[in-house]
Image 1 (tube, rainbow, N blue to C red):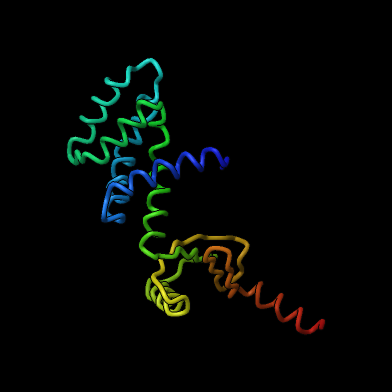
Image 2: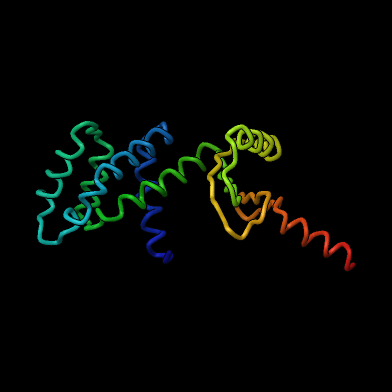
Length: 174
């Protein structure tokens, strides 16, 4: 992602979250709005539609949950011709809400599905190790023969068979 686009996403996500005391709920509400608007974004991004018409359409689509904060953000996005970014802004807002709440994101990479009990055990061990809350996202990779890899920011914990064999090879060759 280009730095300028990332800066734009950050600006809107931070501004939206700053208007709320409960960042997690605000981020979830924005994700709901983005998901609800998703099928209509191509139409809503049409430059031939006047901003007031776009906003009226959005207000009717989001009638179930007309929150002032969300509608204000959408009004600004429409005025700046950036309504197409709402899904990406919602994703960035969720990341920022986690950061603000002290939640670290861990990516659990494996070749096969892992049982929820095992995931919970890994999550608990990681929480103790880093001294904070962990949110685990799952990824599958054909590159992993067995075991798992866990990424937390720049840290990689390699518990895969390939990683263990590589570590053993380095020990033997030294």
